[in-house]
Length: 398
Image 1 (cartoon, rainbow, N blue to C red):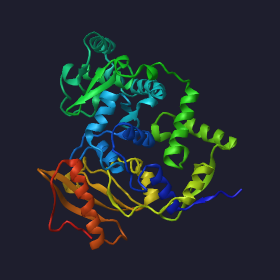
Image 2: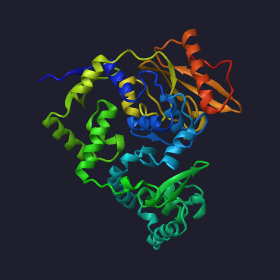
Image 3: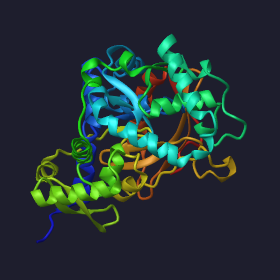
Image 4: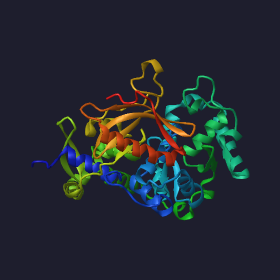
């Protein structure tokens, strides 16, 4: 049987539609509206780099121009409609997903114990229990309250002071929860004092959780291989993802499609008939030029983004300055359903300073696009708390 073809243009538009970037979004960007955005995305990655705006803030602002950072803080720390934990990295996640994270808690704990046995030296378990007991008896705790900072030459959180490592381990294993942040530093408490009772009391078996994770990933990606679906929430293993896809295909819940890549090649993927119908009827995208976070959901899977958009992106934070191709932290720039370039823009005092813009190969960049980019950066000023945009004389690398 011939597989239906999902053309590259339709694939890009479907992918952006599922991620709320095909057309301009409206809404206040706070409260229930923000909850809906977070639910649609599945999560928003949290990152500390703040050259212009933090990753999670730029992700949410890209969908709701009225969004301000305080709104996400309120979901986590006050409304308790979102919680912080791990997908492929730290993320803000809808609170209604909390029961599904129990499997991840257990698997993360087992994985961490297998991966880093060196720090499980004598007394390690006692350290864990001491930290847990302290939180239970005395309440909220941050890493500043439990010991020193990273050791010199630290290669990860397992090299921290033992008490700080124990604190992070307890969070990853679900025995502590982030209750709020202060100055971007996480503060922890017992789950029963953070997670609403209705979510804390809800349990599902592993099969239900795996089915939810895989079907939820497909709903948000629009299409994908079993590996891409498994990587979305990082709850299902690769083997479990392959088994789920085989069962769902046999039962007619999903279908196979030939997905056209940006280079014209084809890749077998899974989708649903509803997604194929939707892709055929989506409107043309907005012509707005958009500044995206390097950790935006449409880009977090770098290999997938390269296949679909023909856009190769690597963060150069850890690349020595002399070897950087672009810059420390450059932002992808999208227009319509194409990624048209990348920009080095950062907050300097009360201004956004544009050092350079590199158009993608084959993309022209004239006065109209320059004007649209300028308008987008003026919008970003509202998020970044700046008053103006300054341009280097040689900013365009076209």
